[in-house]
Image 1 (cartoon, rainbow, N blue to C red):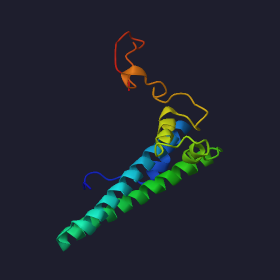
Image 2 (image 1 turned 90 degrees about the vertical axis):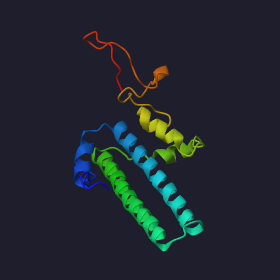
Image 3 (image 1 turned 30 degrees about the vertical axis):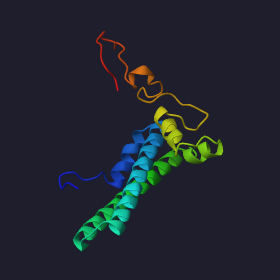
Image 4 (image 1 turned 45 degrees about the vertical axis):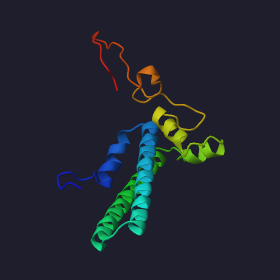
Length: 159
């Protein structure tokens, strides 16, 4: 990790998420869970490489250090998910585990991809959609970009 760039502290993260809408909070959780899945896959691949192909003890120690670092990042992401859950509940809302809802309805066939799609489009469950967030509700043929004119009559691309 760069000495110039430090991750946001849990307290700063908790403060920042107070400004987010519920669909955006759920989208953040989906993003965090996706990152955790990638870290877990990476660690599995590193462990396999260490067991099967790593030749020197120095290389093994270095790779084990990467695994430990990934585990620390994963713990930080788990903490952020817990903070998102606490924020939702603090607002008087029930926390919804999207993967459980989708699984109950028999729609989780692609390894949770439907969950991520729901969170990105602002849906708080697999059957009920909320308003679109930042134009992600109807990406259309332009891949989520809109080229409509703004109030000043200028053409632009809005993400």
